[in-house]
Image (cartoon, rainbow, N blue to C red):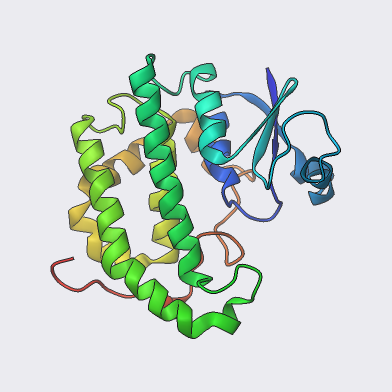
Length: 239
């Protein structure tokens, strides 16, 4: 199967979670908008293509199928790329974890755009400072503490063996390191399992090659994980 991934150019964004799975598995795929431009996405959003109509990218075209939403795409790809254990219980657990990751991604995005996604960051900076402080002080310790326990119970993996969830947790940690380096440094001693998982994923041959390639775009202040120094900071003791 040759997959066609549709996501906006210039950013990692939510498409990166799918890209990591395809790269790790050595799957044949085309990153369509990077070759044909963002205009290639619009006909699908307008319903001008056969198949399920996506609301927004990322979405994946696999033969006659159009699959949208990150967690849904990874649930579809997992068995096909050998990135999820066999069995209904394991696959439901993988989906559950990926949906929880999606919740965290939304909170990270909303920390710099708490009022309106379509408005400039500069127009909501004061509100962003309050939202980012809550993310650092309360939400990151809660989310990362949960995933730390999950990985510990999985003997160093989210599901006991390597899976697409491990790849997504890698992306979460890398993204937060870029966006909130001071906060992540303050949490470092509380997430040793996640740190070891991040290091192992980075050393996987296909991932290492991808990270060193031009296909891996750098984090920037147009994506989900954005570094604004005024939003970063330490975390109070006890969190």
